[in-house]
Length: 435
Image (cartoon, helix red, strand yellow):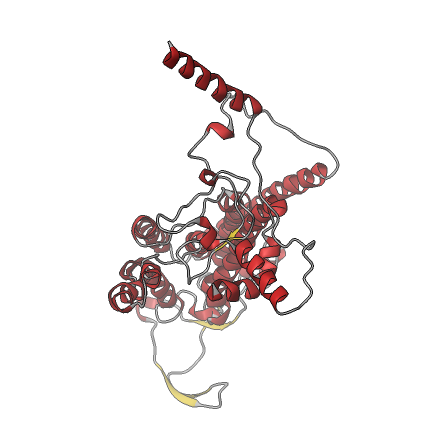
């Protein structure tokens, strides 16, 4: 058909790629695509939610209710209510089902309105790691974030479960690459962030960049004019506050920002715990042990990564094999009617079923994971369109190289003893009929 022909011309390079000779390569590239997508989305979301929020906010607003804390609350509220609600309402697909589907021109167009929402498993997984990373980054200054994070994870779990079973489009089977990637790489990073960033927050409290001079104030009571950096001024009324015979001390500017210094322990803490510092003895002791503990966690995680790097390098030169402990069941693939094989195909929005990008004449149709109850497989075969293109080219007098095969065939060789077994059964049945 003309529609098949158009798709063939636009997807010729895809058809070449989907050769059965490259079936295993395709499966590996799908896993690679999922892993790289998960990595990129994770980095973007971590930077967008935690890192940018920290570095764009003023340091003195770290524990302020009007700045950073409000931003964190807005993020958690969006994760608990806004995002799951939009996901469950699914307005786009409701419009397709109730408005577009009744006005479709044919059955295929109407059926395409009920295919469900396409989703990316990497995107859903990174949404979970983003919440865990956000809670770990701000856990010291916003402990309530752990409760908000736990609640958002529970809400998103049930929202994703409902959409997965009810509204989302059926996705092909995938392995455990994303979960393995999270356990081995992302979650150790979260552990390092929770310990290292927490030590900085412990050292920087109370985040006001003010230190006492330990000298009683000599400023006289009165009204003073304050000049700010933005060339604006304001009046300031100084009154006596020494009721109860409590001394009033002068304060000066001191840098409490440690995030730019690593490690923020040892000599850097001395300026905070000195006579004119801002730390109390308990805060200094806690920050010191917290800092050394964070370095210990960092070293352990680096050793964890080093172990995988060594294993990866060793695998390049030495083979490895581990016994899974599973015994051979004796069952063969040819005897399993419920297991389908990999058939190169390409999904297109104009068709209900994928377009087959190989020659399937040499296999049984049960090996294909889908079947159209109305139309045969030849309707979706790009091989048929390729032959039609060659026929048109010959009719137009153009030269056609028939030796250049674009679509390779897919084959299956069933065991020979299976065929013998079928013949023996037929002979027994024939003998019983004769008797």
